[in-house]
Length: 82
Image (cartoon, rainbow, N blue to C red; front, side, top):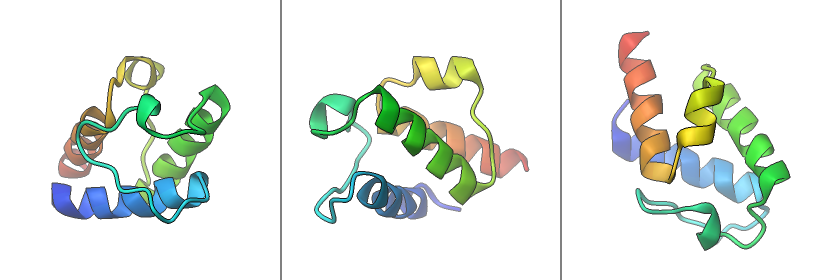
């Protein structure tokens, strides 16, 4: 799966989790860019991403991700390995 396709999938996930069809993420998107992105929604977001891509993030990955670009890198790497 290309990174472009991963971003398209993430747009859908973010729109669903935050109930906002105007959200479009890119590599620099952070929690500061989305109004309702708090710690609870972060958990919901991680679970939704794991389900969509059929993978699990490690606790270290979850706590060290600084932006959506880093999230895409991890998803892309996992999909290449599997």
